[in-house]
Amino acid sequence: MELTDSHRHWKKVSRECAESKSEQIDTEEFLKCVLRNTNDLVFAIGLDGVIVSFSKSAEEALGYPGEEIKGKPSKELANDPMEFERMTEGVFEGEVVSRSDFPFRHADGHLVYCDVSIAALKNAKGEFSASVVMARNITEWKNFQEELIRVDRLAEVGRTASGIVHEINNPLSVINEISGWMEVVVSDSEGLNDDDRAELKTCIAKLGEQTTRCRNIARDMLGFVSGSSPSGDSFDLHELLKNSVSFLSPELKSKDVEVLFDFVEGPLQMHSEPRMLEQVFVNLLTNAIHAIDEKGARAGRIRIGTRLEETSVAISFADNGMGIAPGDQKKIYELFFTTKPSGKGTGLGLPICRNIVRKLGGDIHVESSSPDGATFVVRIPVC
Image 1 (cartoon, helix red, strand yellow):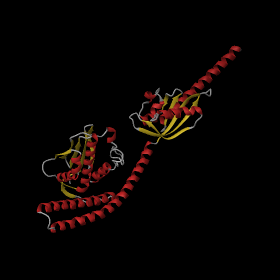
Image 2 (cartoon, one colour; image 1 turned 180 degrees about the vertical axis):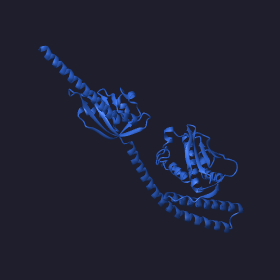
Image 3 (cartoon, one colour; image 1 turned 60 degrees about the horizontal axis):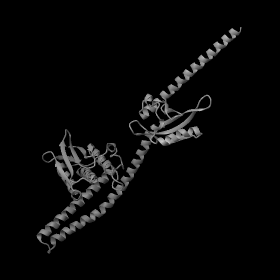
Image 4 (tube, one colour; image 1 turned 180 degrees about the horizontal axis):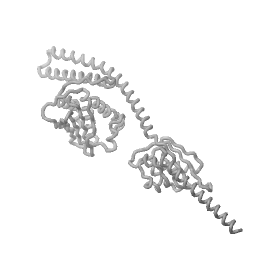
């Protein structure tokens, strides 16, 4: 009888163990299914701070294979390891840990921003056994917000530029009127010899040309800000490039920078917006001069080349300056990003140049860059 009771008890215990084990397996499979299908980043951390499990979405968001990352210190995932370690330890002291905009670092180096919650886990005895991190990837939303801020700042720049353009036109009109009066005075003056008279007339003519150029640039900038379409004109590209260089002659001489031309043979007639292109060329030349000056090298050199392609012309600006770091090459067209020292750059030049070039149907990019210099290439449709 005792044997039969013991046998029954043994069978009951075995059945309960089997059911418990089955429930445990079902629970584990359920949790694995949750980890595979959740959109949030979920990973568990042992008391020693190492990762013990890693959800599929965490693998995709942070670029680490789950099997590779298990067993590694969890703080290595964070952009600020010490802060993350403090957060994970805080849950064992009764803290409620929740952080917005916390940056993790992707396997390739870029930041992944998340809204993070961390909870402590206890075993059956009520003892702390691990912590679990649940994070919602908000990187795209954060980038969208930052883009809205940049757009708003650009709109403010546009409104400011419109006011500046209108204000500039008034003194330009006065300068133009005075230069015309000066030409009359020089022509009628009796106290000048022929050489002095000719030199003064040449200077007055250049003053008039530059005044007209300033007014045209102001007009084009106003059209650019308001979004009007370019009107277009026919011109010789080679002459336009030489004129762009001549505007910077004083700076080129003071910085000891030589400009070399590597043009295709003969004039290069095209139909586009010469004043807008002139603005782009002067900006690229100014950047090249600055890069050469920052490097501190003697015998600065800028080589301007042209080459014909199927439907466009490629204009290259190669300098022997500082070059552009690989990590910065993707950022140089972002509004307000600049590699120049504080107070020397606005971060508007290259973004505006690219907008102008694209508005004219072309594109601009860095073809090559190294510590020995950088090469920018502008492509514009021939007609």
